[in-house]
Length: 109
Image (cartoon, rainbow, N blue to C red; front, side, top):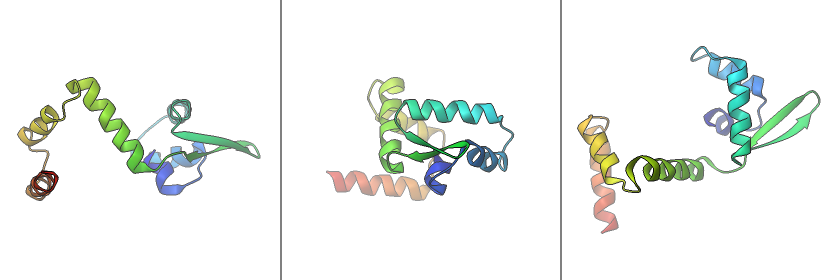
């Protein structure tokens, strides 16, 4: 999805070549994932000459929000607190990130 949001209209080959710059991946894996994302409604495709061209159906922020919500529901029974505790204890958050979270918590009170 990141490649699609970044580039706009893409083919499977466009996404495959972009991902291949970072890591080894099979073309068929990219094609399968894009079909899954289309099935979930995250991508829409149209035929252009001999290839399908894919486009994101929703903005990145909306999809990420939905995926995080689904993850928290599935893994943490709907509570975000254990996720945050895990991130803090595993030192996955920088001091700046912790300060920002603290500021956001204070703002929401």
